[in-house]
Image (cartoon, rainbow over all chains, first blue to last red; front, side, top):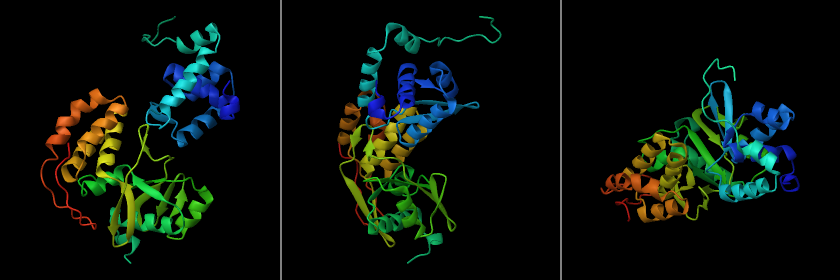
Length: 109
Length: 198
């Protein structure tokens, strides 16, 4: 939906994912959208350099999120919020509802 | 002209800023380097973060900075004679969602430096504290408040617009309490600092 505006479908995917889930890392985003990891990484790096995203290391993983200090953050969030409202209910639930409660190590399910 | 090796942070920043301006690039010093200058080195930064008023082609920027000995390494510019490094974070020049309206100018022997005012510098540090819960940022805001004239009413209004009024209220007394003494400003501009405006 935002591809004509953003110039990249992967950029849109990354932004929607981070808006919906607050934080994420490249590999899980690529897996979620079933897309090429390097393309997701490229968009993450570009948007971090542009100040749109922030990143932090957790162990060996680099987590990304929307930069709360980006000057257009509220406008960007409004745009992403509207975009999400155009997704099907299934897509919306899949993006927004993910397990956040802890899972004990070794638990089979 | 002093050698780059002998320049203080402020002198080097002014030297770079002046060279950029002569080459048509308007840039404003932000971040920790402003804390160093406004706190009179109570905090020491080695990063000189310049935000350009208008985006400059990176190749042009590299050429301009190479004229004064700075060479690009990754996203930074380094000089063999100094430990200070230059970075050009993306614009626009803003603090949170609000543009920077007033840009301060300080004169050094090495040139004129455009930088955030002490008030905007405190806002910038508070934004870091509010968003990242970074205690170092709060400490830097306190150091600037101790040493320079800040406008608490302006910071309060900024925090309200950023939806951070409650967070600001929690630190306002601390900032006000440490900025009531008269201080002599020993920067090259010779401007006198007073207490906080509220």
